[in-house]
Image (cartoon, rainbow, N blue to C red; front, top):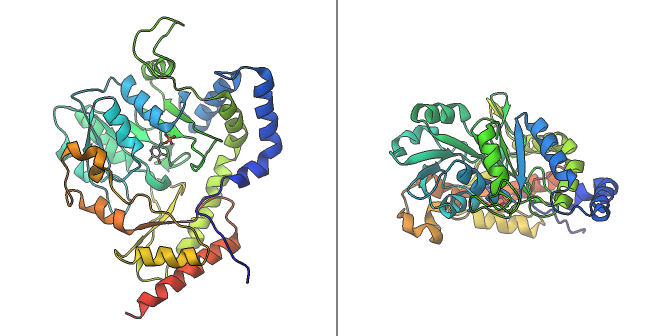
Length: 377
Ligand SMILES: *Cc1c(COP(=O)(O)O)cnc(C)c1O
């Protein structure tokens, strides 16, 4: 019997497929000597702005820094509140906390895993400055509802698009609907580089200018510093890799959608799981394919899948409001029930564009078998 090993994610396929071109570009950076802010950085920023259909892209070191820079550019700091989701990666609230502002959590919609727009208004106070929605797992938030609330209360909107490069809402790419969109090129994201990388998208020239100098030590003129900034540039090497990969992102996102479609069809018969819903008003880019498993069954299912060589992940086992680092915010167990429920139920299946049809079949058959024990009870 051959042992299968299907990882939740594998970045090496994309490198192998494009190795010649990537190596050529990376070597050109090395021999060219412009390791910091070389011409490839600007070229990538321009191409990514064209891809997103927005005025400007400013690259930086990571999406964590992109969020930080966006908040700083909007002059959000101590005393200000930023409304966001408790069901995300820590970077979302880390950035809010690092600039001295306070994250205010609004629970998620169980059907979308994203912030529930119906619960936002009741959390708005005189100190609220912005809404920070996260397009989790590649699924766009309801930006129509979020933008309507933002306009009504004059709030800024910062979109965390780390998992959603290429996702659409109502005909526009996410990250171009709010005031600022923050992107990650971490290797597991839909457009990944070979290390850390990130970017900010905006069509507001004031924000663009502020982000551009805050990412390089806060000075518009070299050696003259007006504000405390960051050292947060995208490495030229990473830009060189991203220039090769960007033309393929749509094709990769389509491959992810086809896998999601297969999973949805094959898993429909399992009674004990809830499948992710297909987005009607937009397009998910399926950074993750995340099912909900009845509380108490997840460990069993994950263990059986592992025995069958199928890797899975739990994003995220602890919602942000219950993280130790956020104890001072004063949220208790039970305060955001949908996020807490999801943290006990979610399970992400293998998902990357190169996942073969035979591997997809192994995944779904293993799941059907894993659940067969519960069908009897
Ligand atoms: C990955 C991720 C980030 C952070 O991105 P980095 O580029 O690793 O800093 C932020 N938010 C979400 C939702 C993420 O998934």
